[in-house]
Image 1 (cartoon, rainbow, N blue to C red):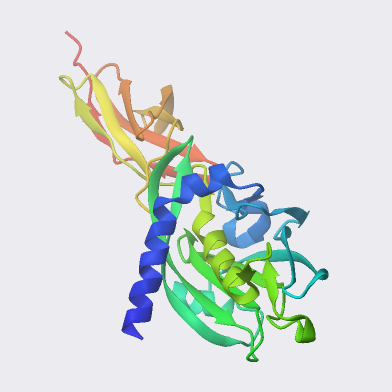
Image 2 (spheres, one colour):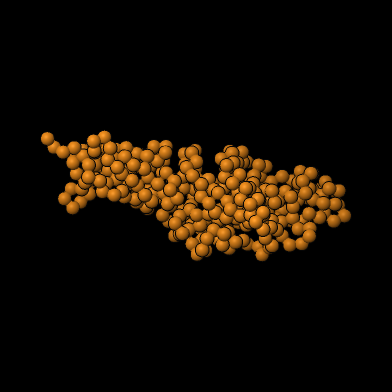
Length: 307
């Protein structure tokens, strides 16, 4: 069991490294808005955040909806009869889980078929903003195999966080070809050479390796430190996974009496940092709002005293 988990973790780590390349080389890339797809569980996620699902090479979109889709891939046919076969396919579904105690449990709960476990392990999902990988989010996956000695079907379910206490659960169902046996006509081969079970299993891993989160997630923490003799505030904006928010607006506020008043604003750079000039001596803070979520820095006493 330990060796299987180490193998699974290695495959998952490779997937994180190759995530951008997988998306770039995919024939189909499905982008699903995280907020509308999840309803109330992901209502705090901004409209610009997506779950990105690139198909393995050779697959094309057959259908797509708010939380499900299907791809068709290369042909398969019987080794003894070229006219007996069909198209390979992958169906995916997306749901959100805020009840499971961890991502391993969430991944198992996402399975649609009651098949025997083949392998399970950890997975790292790339988080990409403006073409930059800002971090990865760890999760778990489980791969199950169809029952029967000749069954070629597989199902892979993966789960990873997208918000505090909320996991995205993506399920890939590979049921075509459904069997390895073509009876008297031999065995089913994809592209005339790859046995059906080996093909389906491999494409499940390739589909998982391409999954990404795209776009800034809600701000969770913003820092503010006085610099340059107290005339500039500098800091960074990060989400709940400690990933930087890129090119997002931050607003400087000044305490006037008992109210906070807007002074000016700027945007974070391509590593999530900002620098903003302040005026006279006062109490200041910096605020970042994205979607329905606002993060506020601690109050900073800064600025030049009047002569």
